Length: 417
Image (tube, rainbow, N blue to C red; front, side, top):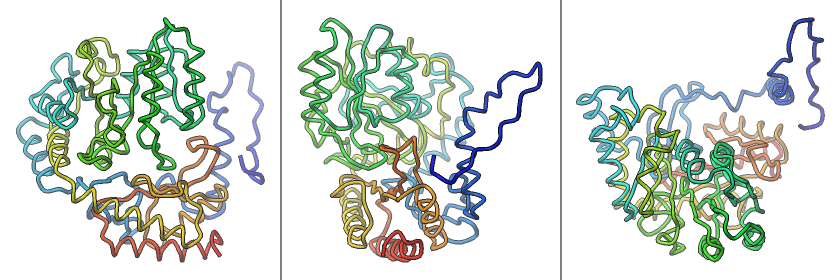
C-alpha cells in the first residue's frame, strides 16, 4: 500500500461476535477510499451508457474512444455475427438452462466446436462458459494431487486457480526465463506427472513467450504443455492461431486454451487438443459438467466470428500497423512502456504509482479516451499500468488522436515533461 493512505480504525468485537471476514480486505478498502476522497472518479466502476461501435462508446455523457476492451479484431458489431446471434435467439430461445452433459448441448454448441477444430486443425474442441473456466477446468482435471504444474510467475489468475483446485504441486519460475523453467523441471521426479503452463501473450505487459525454446525444454523432460492464447488468437500468426503458430509449435503442444471474450467478440472459453483421450474430459471436468452451457445466441455468434477470423489477414495487418504506430508515438512522447518494441495488441504504459496512475486515467477519460487502469497485485513487480488494447477497427486517424490525448493528459498530470 502506498504511503499516506491511512488504515481504518478496527472496532473491538463485542462478546459473541466472530471475526469480521471482510477484515482481510481493509488495506484495499482504505486504498480505494483514499482515491475517492481525493476527488478522482472510481476507475474500476465506469459505466458505458451506450456502445456505438467496437471503438466508440458514450461514457459519462460524452463520446469516448475505447482503448481498453480486448476487442482486438472488432467483431462485436460485425453484421454477420450479430445476425447469427439474432437468428439463434429467435430459433432456440434465450438459454439452455442445463449442463452440456445433460440438456445443454444444442446444435450450435457442436457447430462452434467444429469451427474451433477447423480453425486450429485439431482433433478435439471443448467449449466452456467462460475463458476463466476453461483454464480452471482443464488444469485442475489433468493435474491432480501428486502431479506438478510448472508455470510462469506472471500467469493469469485463472491458471493459478486451476492449479489450486486440482491440488497439484505448483512450481513457478521467473517470467519468460527458460533457464529457470528448466531448473525447476530438472528437480521434479522423473516418474511424476508434469504439466508446463505458458501464455502466448501475457496480458499485463503485452509481451510474448519464447514458446519455441520453452516447448522444446518441456518435452525434453517429458512434460505435457498447455498454452493460453487468450490474447493472441485471431491476431497473431498467419492464420490467427496465436504465438504457437508463429513459433511453429502448434503440433507440439498438448492443449491450447482460449477465450471468446477478446478477438472473437462474445463470451465463453475453449480448449483444443489432439490428445486421443481428450473426449473423456467432458465427463470428468467439474467446471464443464456442473455449469450451464452458453446460450444459443452466444455460440452462434462465436462460430460465425471464428470462421470469419480464418480470413482476417487484412484486419490483422491493420492491427499490427496500429500497434506499431501507437507504441512508437508513446515512446517518442516520453512514456515508459512495458516492452521495448510492440509485441502484441497490448501496449502497457507504466505509471509512477497508483495515485498518479488514477489521475492520468481520469485525465484521459476527460479527454474522451478509455484505457484500463491495472494495479497490484494483478500486475507484475507491483507496477501500476495504463493498459491500452488496440482494435483492428481503430482508424489511423483515431490512433493519432489517441496520441494527442496522451500528450495533453501526460503533461497535465506531470507524467511527462
